[in-house]
Length: 535
Image 1 (cartoon, helix red, strand yellow):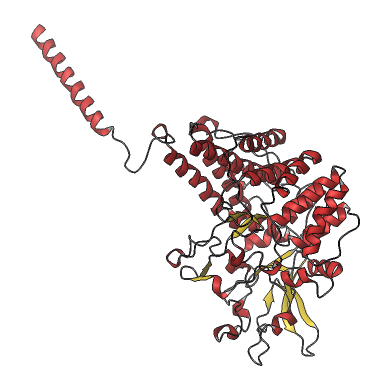
Image 2 (tube, helix red, strand yellow):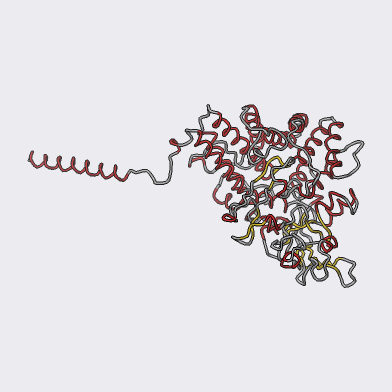
């Protein structure tokens, strides 16, 4: 009997050894990955981690641009025809719902950015110049994401660290927590003394990353949005008096490749002039195609014989409205310098190529979502095109912030803080460049009008309308009627515009559109998240 039990014991012992050996053989590291505890340890790790943060920021530009542009009153969506891009149509006409892809996409991308920032902030130890700088940069980018989340959605989940699986279904956050965190992140980043600064007006090595001045601008915006006017004015004035930026005389090319990393640019997305990477290498990808003139609905033959350099590959989105054109005329007149550097009338487009039969005429299809006002600020140029991939890509840099916005923000903050002379000084710099008479006194209404024109289609208008309380009036008719432009009538004088599509329900609704809806998917998977009012 003892011998029998002894045999059993020997067998079990051998089985344990065998199974343990198999388990050890199966316990291998996953190829191509690095455990978190083995990363974020060196300066090289820190650089790679912050590069991932900037990679996310870069990928968000198109979503950011279209979201904030289409929701404003300064563009009609356009495109090749009805249904060309339903998601953008819905936003522009205020018929969107929680399933809208552009809204959902930007919401998710903000949290992807926050996740990458949190990984840097939580895991990079610091103590070296490179690591401390990476942490500061991540705080600036996290603040930028949180600024958009709290302004666009009001009470989104508040996330300040890498979440464990048990924490995934976060409830609505408190806006006060967002603003406190934004202020804290930016203040700590500025005070770290690790963020780079330009060495002078012509330093072209800094604008693609977070600088001290960018952090100050974002902190100033956070203060301004909270009506902390004196604190906001201090931040904007610090940037303005740094003398590291200035307005350039060549306004019509302020958004063109020739001004990449120029004196007026503060923060840019870099476009790579790499024909081998036309899709991912160009900063805008197909974004410039989207906003270029609808070449297949126009006569662009002059391009091919060198009579003009307006590229034919555009898709005709984001067209200026008659209302914004009239706002330009009211301030500057029909020959206004800034007006004609921003948009062109149909007659001006025809005059660009005054060769019989080769004028850039509108074809028989017409231009959908168009009122005969052509964007000049975002015109597509031959020399900026990269052929290949999906149509054409573009290696012009795209800017998140340029110096003119800083002057206008500084003017508003200074005025509201009781310093009208400083506000007047800042806004008159803008007006002088626009070849307008300087103002003797300045009001908030002056700043509003100036900002609309100076920054047309630069993603500032919508958030301004919301915080000023002007959205209900300015956006009430968005989507009421959708124009199509047919060129000139047979008399050769009057523009021909028809309205082949209209909506029964359209425009901004008070009590609903002050905040965007939380995405349908987020609501469906997170029972702790309460939808915004009206949705």
